[in-house]
Length: 318
Length: 318
Image 1 (tube, rainbow over the protein chains, first blue to last red):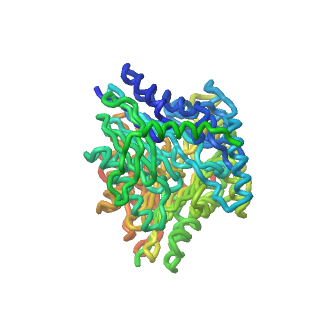
Image 2 (cartoon, chains in turn purple, orange; image 1 turned 90 degrees about the vertical axis):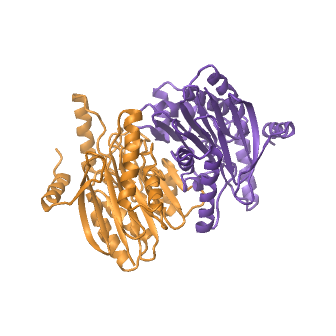
Image 3 (cartoon, helix red, strand yellow; image 1 turned 30 degrees about the vertical axis):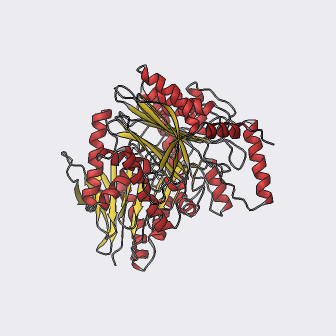
């Protein structure tokens, strides 16, 4: 049987490499999602997810995550989590609760502590320095504080035909205390139905939640569209609506996979993503938006691009 | 031009009576939604919304609310708000923010205070006593703590053809600290597009967010379905899926109105709702689910029913 994972951003690649190894050995999509996203959360140089994520305007790291089981639609989510080491693991645990499955603020740590999850200070020295530098820049210029909202989102299909998805994000850098984006919101940041497929989004959460684009992508796949058609149509149709009705549209990037392991991507900005299936070794791609709303141009990331990326995220911060 | 409002639960009726009076005088849908929901929030005997709402398991009232503008899809939302007098007003204000438009926990009060909104203790003596009684009951029996999650949700159409919607809720009585439901979640608790119509939901938020039913109802109206067809199809299709895939389905009730002022309702439990349009004086209806998934039976609430309701919500609590 087919299996596979697709995920937003280059940072997801190690996670889906591990995840699809598990899937090849008969592991479940649910387990693969949690294991893969934990790897991204734990790596301190990814500044938009988990440990090492950039703080809000007060200097506090506040994290959002969600998990969805495509077999029975169970959802767990956390938002504004300040001290849980792996928000995705708590979200997965919450998905088994019939009530109280989406927790925010202090309630997240209370639940996680009672359930035995690891607690830690999520602020790294590096993230703190980046925050201090941005504060200084803001004092000296008219720079917008907002920048960087690279949610990791993943969809997985296992050999039993089960699907799952998950998201994890530190949200907008310099966000207001308590701000949450689309990542923990069903239908906006993620959606999955094992009988159809799954989708997940990254970009400006405030705009993504206006269109319920993950739900719409899955729904379109359910009408028979290929993932590439579905995700492109969902994104382009809504981006056009938003341009016409509001005059502007934030960054939108989505990935999708159906229950055959076929996949697609749509974006209105340059965007990296990662895919691995039984047919395809783990691969990092770059997608470039088309001018005319047709499918994005997709190419495999070059070694040069990967080296420059790694140098950039690990460069010393003054 | 047509105008109108539809809203969940009997408690909404005074609000939409005021709201549609404003609409008749040329007021906007956006203003009508905020004015109408504020009335529900302010009335202390409604135990599931605003002041007088029932507390979480710690005895703290935590409120969720959202506002959506159907002209440009702007959304503002708050969740886990503990001290803002009118969560719907803060949500509306947030809908004008390009960033940070969905706030949770302490961030809500921080924003609201800076913006000049009124702050108050939202716990009434009556709600406190109800909470204490439930704690005692739980000690003495195996009673489930959860009960009562009657979100007020409203959709409005004004004479210019603009639409808006809003929700406000204290969520599940005895919820865990930080629990949020579908009410502040776009696509699940609410959705509106002035070129089509709007929908809003009440019931078990944990299950409602699995189906994105408000978005789906609006989408179906956009394909040409009447509101009654759209809302029934969205709810019945997903309720069947959930029964089949998960084995059970929580309480779902939805109301919808299109941009001609036509409306519909779907529910799998006995459910009261209120409607007022240029064609219809403010009316409280009761809807009863059909056995076979067809349209619910709808009747105007009798004076006897209304009297019993008022007596019940104002009865002394021992």
